[in-house]
Length: 150
Image 1 (cartoon, rainbow, N blue to C red):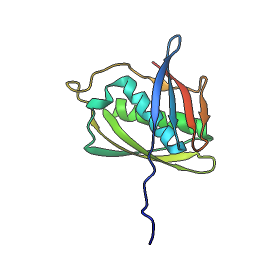
Image 2 (cartoon, rainbow, N blue to C red):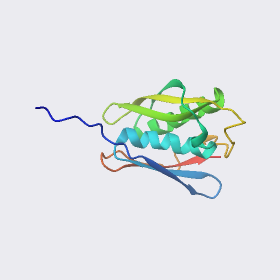
Image 3 (cartoon, rainbow, N blue to C red):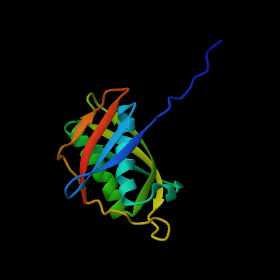
Image 4 (cartoon, one colour):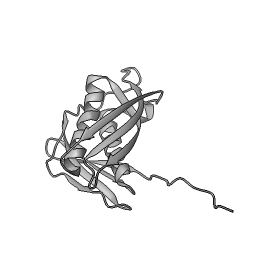
């Protein structure tokens, strides 16, 4: 008899930290994909209350970078363009990385359009930066630390 298959649990987390004029995010996850997902959700959580975002619509985001750090900045920039340009807020993000080390990704995003009656405006994030960016994609302890321009 074949043992039942189980899906791995993705324990992702993020938290913000203060800097002199900007704000930083630290994201952790057991997988490299999970750390990208947590980084994106952590950034959006600075902008609005994620608990109030529903997920009836989907979008796809693709990003490329010369190395994993550049990929992270490009990916976060795409999420900002989605939020600021299209007014679309992610509720969930599922990332697929490509390359060794990863230099491209495709993210399936579920969420909805920004509704000012339900989605409070918190912080206006202008850009993801390379300043003090740290990225470790080691499976089992992947983490990212980066600063956002606000």
